[in-house]
Image (cartoon, rainbow, N blue to C red; front, side):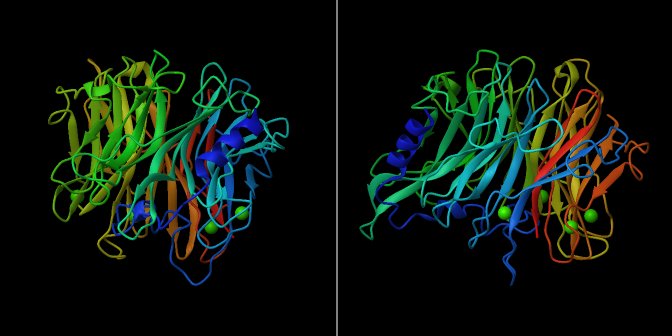
Length: 478
Ligand SMILES: [Ca+2]
Ligand SMILES: [Ca+2]
Ligand SMILES: [Ca+2]
Ligand SMILES: [Ca+2]
C-alpha cells in the first residue's frame, strides 16, 4: 500500500514544476507571518539544522524524567539544505498514549520539504513498529509539501493536513506550467500505512479555486488544519485566493469521510472570508460540541492594521450571526499586528480558547512581542469573554502558538526569547484569564531545549493528558 501511495504521489508530482507562482511565499511581506520567531525562517548568516523536539512536563510544571532524556526527546529527521529543514507543527496522542508528531522535513532526495508523521512510545522513544522505523514520509521531489496539523481519530486512524505546490496544467505568460498550492490531506491507519479507503491510496489533493471568467490561471488554497465533525466529514481551515495572485482570504472546504469533496458546505462548496480585499488567514480550526466550526487566525479590517480573528460557522458552513459581525469577530490588543494561531474547545463545549500573539512596533522594554489569549463563550451559561494580551515576559519577546484545556484551566505554549537564546515556554491560566501561580514561576514554565545564543526554538503545539501532564512539540535549532 505504501508503494501504491508513493506511485500516486510521484505521479501527482511528476513533470513540470515549471516556474512556480510564488504561492509558497504568501506568508512573506507581512509580520503576520511565519517569519521571525517561527524558528526556521529567520534570515541570518548561519543556516543551522533544525530538529523536532518533544518535551513532557508533569502537571506541576516539572520536566517528566520518565520521558525521553530528562523529559525531552529530540528527533533529527534530516540535515538542512537551504531553507528545507525539519519542523513540527502539531502532535496528538493515541489511545495507547503514544505520541504522534506532524511536520515537515527536508526531502531525502532533494532540497525541498516533505511531510512526515513520526510516532513515539509513551516514554518518548521513536516507535519503530510504526510505518518505516517510526516515520511515514510523503516523498515528492521538488514540490515543497507542507504539513501543518494532524490528529489521531477515535478509530485510531491518523489524518494529516497541509498543502503542496502542484502543477495546475495552466500555461503562464512566460510559457511555463503554473504550479499553485493545493490542500493535501493524507490518512494513515494506526500502523502508519496509507489508508486506501481515503482518497486515492490515502491521499487527497484539492485546489478548490479553478480559473473563473476569462482567467486561465488557478488560485490556490492551503490547509492549516483539518478536523472531523460528528458525521465523520472533514472540514479544513486555512487560506487561499480565487485569483492567481493578490491577497488571501480565510478558506475552507469539506470532505466526506472517504475524501470526496462535499459541495453543500456553505451551499457553494467553499467558505471564503474577506473583509476589505486585504489578507485574512485561518491558522487553526476547531469543532464545537454541536458541530459548529471555529476558525482562528487574522484579518485586515483597515489598510495597515492586522487584527486577530475568530469566525464561527454553522454545522453546514453558514455564518453564525449570533457571533461578532456576521459570524466574524476581530480582536485588537493595542498593536498593528495581532494573530491567533490555535484554538481548543473547553469542557462541555461551553467555551473556546484561542491563543496567539501581538507584534511590538520595536524591540523595546515597553513594546515587544507578547502572547495573547481569548476565552470565548460559545454556549449558553458560559463565563463572560476574556480577551487580553498575557505576556510571559514584559521585557522581551514572547508568543503563543498552541493552546489546550486542562479541566477548567487553559494551557498555552510558545516561546520566550531572553537575550539571543530562545526557549520553549508554557503558561497555565484560570478561566478568568489570571495565571495559575501554582504552576512554574508565577504561572510560566520555560524549557531551554537547545542552550546557546542564536539558536531558535519554539513550542508550536501543546497537548494536556488526562493526568494533567503537558506535552509540547516544536522545532529546535542547533
Ligand atoms: Ca535535522
Ligand atoms: Ca491590530
Ligand atoms: Ca513580551
Ligand atoms: Ca535555546
